[in-house]
View 1 (cartoon, rainbow, N blue to C red):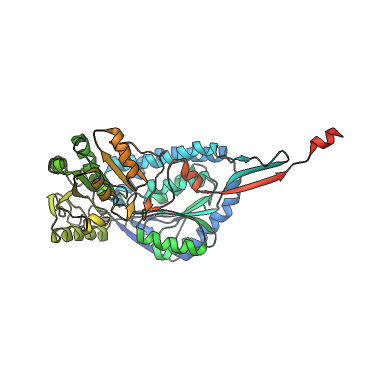
View 2: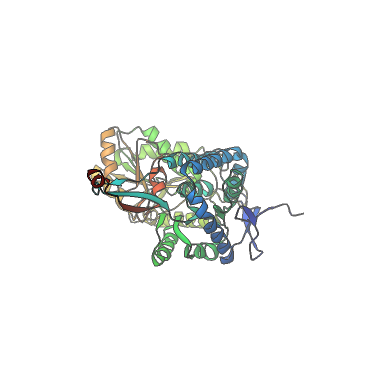
Length: 483
């Protein structure tokens, strides 16, 4: 008997089967086994979801910020209440380890708590136009917002856009990756149980061409938030530009971590190692370009290797989520060897201790890397550090900025003031100095081809509002009193 769980779309507050009647197989990257069947959506399903969102938006947009705040904090509580089931779903589909998956999902709840709180501070300005005029601004919702998420952090990154969009009074149609859809569909049920009105959040699953394109192209969708590859972001940007609607694009990264000789090398080594261990390097902001002052490069690589060599697949790091990405990472490692790079640590797929069809790659540190090599220029999106030496501070900054990306960066050095000065010179949306912490309160987004707009922080709330100016001529009561 077939016991595989089957998921339908979530539209108008209810599960809705796909118009086509078809479902996609969702398999585990841990062992290749079928774990779920996901609704295979189409333009017809998108139409139904967008119409539901459009009909719900007028009433939702008229609610007070206090009313929206109560619902969002209730959603946060619902996520935490269902956390064990959500962890189970995300680990099954994405191969995540339980502890980091739980942390990611708790942050997803934090987004709803955070935006549920700060939406009550949403306010416009008054502008002095003289005693007989009142001019003021107000922040109004766009209407229906499309949120499209990738496979590496489906619920966390979905909530990062959904929470501020709903807080601002918009309604949302969410399109998760076809590889990791289960937790997004579970979120639909959680939000309804938390009191979110039917149609305010809808989830349509399926492929990019058959769901993503019709969603971005729909005339009732007034804003798009996308996280994913540069190529797909450009395609979405072209559609949005033709329709003259705004977008938030959070795209790829090739983020540098600069380590100077006077840094705490143990702390820097731990940070560098974690950049390839967390989600096996499948994090857009992972600092995987290791730029090291030449005099300490060998020692730092040795310390990183000592950390990584003891890590076990399935226990300390997870698999690559998709077979295509698995093949891409192995292909880039092969090209790096052909171009003269050396794997000081790792460098191959895992052969021991993993299932036959498991998509595991050894945590890797490449040395003898030149700036023009493919692995130095292109996003790998896997557990691979590429190490390159520098001799001067200016050379370090030049190497850091020698990329089309600008998502994140990190600096490790003994002089905090020097680290802050370097952070100002690095072309990236966020830079951590000596392990500086980033949270839901800190804005996140990229320079250059890493994206447009900002997520997280109070800035994201205003990304999902459009500004209106109202000017009123007041009666001249002073003249009447004088008479």
